[in-house]
Length: 119
Length: 114
Image 1: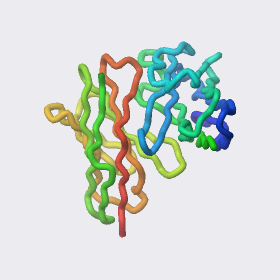
Image 2: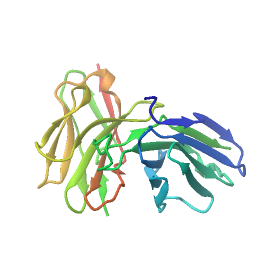
Image 3: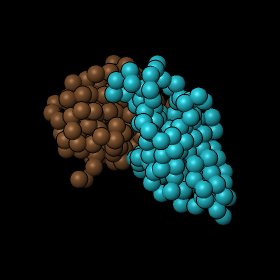
């Protein structure tokens, strides 16, 4: 398995532009998470999905952020408009829900992240 | 609400010496505890977990962690540190009532020197 795949690896954009980050979870995983990592705030959970349905988006900073999961193999995190304070590394992670077979480790598999710089 | 505390931003150890990275947690019900490691410009990698059973769990790369319920701790240990262990280490917890949400600590930078 190729693991959790995120694209792009690096993104540099100007303030005010729309940014879309992409994630392909591990095949068979039915839970997906978006995290943001900064020096100041550490690792923050933004939103997570179970079976493509958003369960908890309380970590989404504000209305400029939105996330979708149209199917089991793809998710996007969109920032519109972007601001310099959004600069961070954004991680996607996936896992299998307990009781649904597959991975029973109860842990997550992380992607390599997208480093976003908003100038 | 569930939470994790990693009281040390950085731990410095000489190669060959034992290392400990501290973690305490707060959850409702029984905890599911994890350690992850992050190397520069990489995602988090799973090291080990405690779900139930023996309080001493062994994981990848010679690391182990001891679950202490009375002290609500889950410290990461290794008997003999290597320079290649230098990385950022995260403790994480999910409570029985915490749904599917894994809460991470702020991370501890481990530096192993010759």
